Amino acid sequence: MGRLAIVFSLLVVLTLLSIKLYVKEGDKEAFWDSWARDWEEAIQGDTDEMDRMIKAIPLFELREGETVLDAGCGTGTLIPFLLKEVGRGGRVYGLDISQEMLRIARQKHYDGDVSFLKGDIIEIPLPSESMDRIICFRTFSIIDDKIGVLREFFRVLKPSGVVVICNLLGSKEETVLLKEIGGAIANDTSPGVKEMEQFFLESNFTPVELLDSDTLYIMKARKPLQ
Ligand SMILES: C[S@@+](CC[C@H](N)C(=O)[O-])C[C@H]1O[C@@H](n2cnc3c(N)ncnc32)[C@H](O)[C@@H]1O
Image (cartoon, rainbow, N blue to C red; front, side):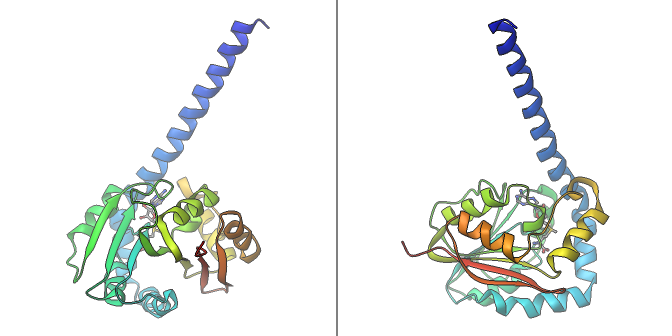
């Protein structure tokens, strides 16, 4: 094959690859947009799930005055509780890729300092070392590039800041559920303890707590002071 043919083939492959990536990203955003209203109704109407969420919040160990990012905030279910924990001197940011999720979140009344940001968790539109804590609730398992996202969390956290990844289902149950739901999240998975520990170490975090039971998944790690 001549040099020109090789360059041309490479260009074709790269173009196809970037179209595929674009379609995948676009698919996920559209998927969550189309789910926003049903998500809000399902979550708000599920008193057992809400109770279990409220019981999990003290495990986040939020402190008064902290600046917290709710990464993948959806319709803002967690926001009032985070605001309550950080108090008057604290600040909460809600980030989500879905315009529709954010539209519902923004309509609510919140008692406290909250800002919503539209963006991808892999490229958070916040300065480096600006957050005390990042909460990633019911969202980490549906992220494709998990180490990439942890590295981005590391960038945004202040030294000694903490990331908390939490689901109300164990990793096995969550992975089965994602397959059942299907669509753009059918092949997503929730990492178990060993895998999660490895992910934390690879992204320079110090693991703090790694719990994966049938009904609670909580993975915490700290960004070292230096
Ligand atoms: C299962 S919902 C959870 C929402 C919220 N944390 C809750 O528990 O009610 C997952 C959320 O993650 C958002 N999401 C998915 N991929 C994302 C990404 N790459 N960047 C930011 N948000 C994303 C979705 O739009 C959706 O709102």
